[in-house]
Image 1 (tube, rainbow, N blue to C red):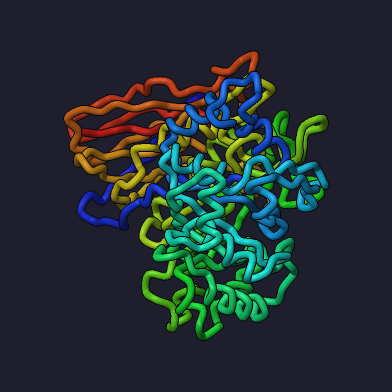
Image 2: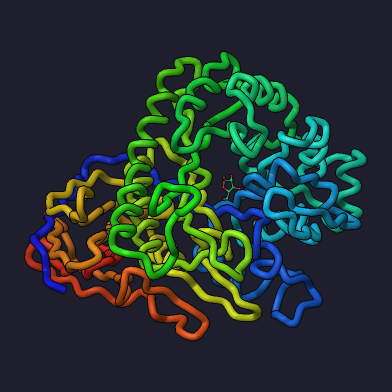
Length: 491
Ligand code: AHR
């Protein structure tokens, strides 16, 4: 591919945006399609190698990502979930949020909290506001966290877990303007403050999150946050934003074999995340009764394309376009590290922009997985401001900077730099000014086509490779391949 004009990247080493909380790299696990059953959980009697029912291959892959936190059990499913169905004797139900499929409830509270504990991940519990009661939710928290001799703590012990687990984050309801109950914002705010008053978790103090808007309804956040007592019982509000190639929910666009117009429109749409975060932070800041560190939790985001015939609900192939979308968003989150303490990509296995796809006993790591693995040096690093001067990528009326970059200082003083070439056609030369490098290493992820992806037959078609970076005095230069994501470590 022909090289395009030079982009110059400058990092402001003396200025600091804030810590990139590891939880920015969190995951979302909903009971949906082939995610929990088959994708993650196969049960102890399965022929697929597993530990206490969780697939060993999937577990090891997740472990390598250092998953910082997991949101569970939904999504829309959370507002249908009755926790008692999933402890002790299990009660099968229909999953009415997702096509009425059978929900055996063999993966329940114990299985989720044990999984998180084994992974060293924090827990983000979404309680059922839509079709549950405050008593049911309060009982669930006592069951999970109770330390005393209460009936619920004893029941947990009888079910095999003596020590309480930790609930790190708690949300009451999900998308309450939609699948979570089609509520008006003031009604939800009243319910939230009422329910939150009874969400005791023994001595634990989970971070309390209000279910907020999706892309088109920022005013929902505005009105929920108007409630004078919402700041007394919550520490932040969530935002959901999905990237559709076409912006049309009835014809979102294909996962593979798509035209360049849908590469361009998908990336243009995903870049709106930056403005949405700024807009929502503006709404938060306009409410003086909220604490100064009131946070924004982007607890659902990612690519959403048309479903694939013959596959489970919301299964979609994951391509080089997904990798670029993931990295563009992660760069945006780094830029807002001071105000966005957690994000949850949707979702983990076999659903939407998944890390992992499974087919029976086989497992495939997606291009998005590789981005998450390459970006692990950013967990807990200090985000630094970055300036970028270079050409745009253009398609028809669409234009946006061909390259995107972010940088952070790690605990040992080295710099991590993420560079995305969002141009599907041309390599781009990049120069990093005042790099101060004694040594540099890097990896690059690219594909031979916009929709390059991995399959069971070809699992390594998209995989990170060593990057070629030239040290030229105080500058670093490289050619970033078309449609690529790079991470450099500068010592
Ligand atoms: O991630 C899939 C669904 O998208 C979630 O269940 C819901 O919250 C959102 O609409």
